[in-house]
Length: 293
Image (cartoon, rainbow, N blue to C red; front, side, top):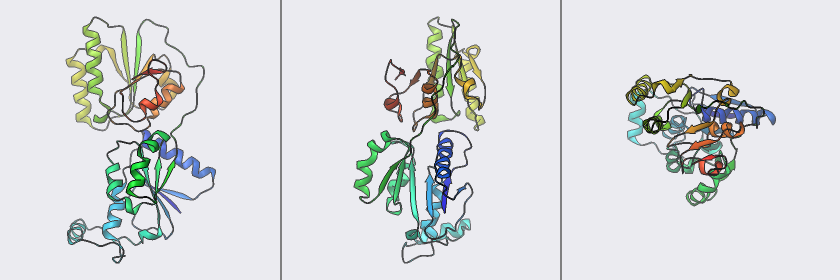
């Protein structure tokens, strides 16, 4: 049995990658289940795939396993478990095939892998670029670890409607959260407007869950007087709507893996503006050919 332990996000690149993984498993008729809530019992010889953020299950497995002769339990861990009434784990880590998914070479969750690498037998990288950057480090930490690649990908698109107006249309596609660096984008667009260039719009597509952060973004937009240039469209599933009549997609993030927004934009023939040295940006974008870094 394969258990895919994932976070609770229902949108975004991590979720999309997980869907691709399930498609691959369906193609080879493998039996699997997606774990969104914490469970603590896994059959021997099961495969556990930790998809980025669902590490607390594994952490509790280490701290609470009944196999005390394999993994020691410190007094501090026992007291912590007693305080939160954590159930015990009924499994032996040595009988499980454990995989850790790396979504980016600078992903914060990688520190968890480094700390617990002796408990993982496999690593899955979401691009060859990520594998090439981390392979030497991983093998140095754990010489026997097996490294695999399951690439992010999208299908090429045809007949995309191009913008034929004098107004430059920018798109931002992604959730509205701090690591996406939207304030920097707004201030940059504000400088364009300060120079008398006002023939542009920014269409924002994505959901927001942090109302306080969302209100802060709205305050920035208002304070630098670009409210009339910004259209917030919420979460949209129709990819054609995202990229038709669009001149550029902008990805201002300071932290990314192999961005689906980037891949989709290029698949639709829309140039990408993105930050250097973030995720796969330098690997996917050739400056002034299919976008700008």
